[in-house]
Image (tube, rainbow, N blue to C red; front, side, top):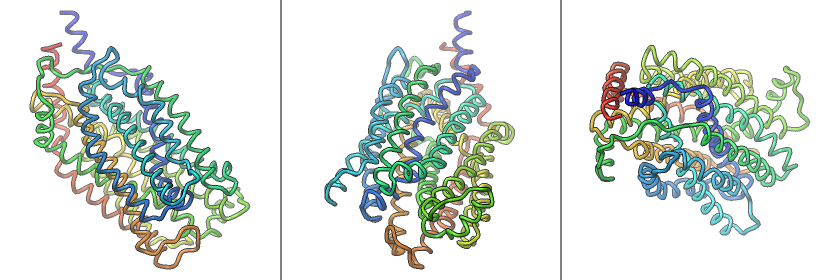
Length: 479
């Protein structure tokens, strides 16, 4: 009896700060590469690597078709992995070095002709996305089996995304200055050195995550469902369908908005006003390139700090009002402040910075909740069907994330191309309109779609409590 009580309590246990932090640095590792992709992949391909915006956009879309095959397979493999370390932790260890290597290779510019470069871009991007799935899908699923306590899961997600935001802070604050410093006018060389450093740190942090985390929740011992049954369970799981659509549209939006920011500062924002704003804080720059890189970094750093502040409050607010309600409210605020960029003229540098701080603060409340809700969806499936397939649940969501990332970047490439964007020259008025619209009204609309989708998510606060209590009773019964 004593042993049964110990195991049952272990599944809903409170996690130590060390374990939460150890889990969190895993997303910090992934974001050293992931955030670099979100913010700079398109700009790297068009302005440093040397392929057109349309060709880069097509690349980002085509790779998604392979993801649609590989990601569900990876989910099945992860759920059926059984080692002395667990199901999901081993994948964080096994993929650490390949992730770092592929992240580096994706930002290397080989000395090849146009066709050779395009082929290299396809091979390295596909390879990076495969390793990303093999790493991040089990890593994400790990949060669903470390504890069964919903408040602890939200806390775990908060730790995760504080570390993720710290990585984003570093990327946004240092990446362009590092590219500028290491490249000395050769941006291709600058990107290569910069991502090499970030990739090395990522590998080390993955090792820390593996060493400090533990898996505690196992599928019901009599579970014998086939792979087909697990996927059928997904299609009958309404909260999962909502999360799939939400994640797809949300990451289309984040990639679209994130990938246009470098263009916004390079071509739309008035350089003299940016220099004047920096000068008011005692920061001087020798040339326009330095002005842009510093202003871009400060813009993103201030926004990310606002995001981190919101993440700290996310758990307490969601415990009181429920994850769904807080998520919708955060998205509504994000819509307002994203759309506001449409009316900000190129010369209003202070307004740009203030609006971004408010936008990031509003969105910050949603960040840890997204992944906590995904773990709740895995619980919901087990609650309704008696079957658990954590990695399969997460695999489709991770595919939606990657599809959104690819489509969002592609949309930006196609929009810029349609508006007449030409790399590395002063842009004509239509191209500037395309940059401004992609910074403001286009993502504001898709953020609004996300808020509408969340209205169909049925795991409210009352359902969370009922589901948690009933699953805890079941696990005590077979512990």
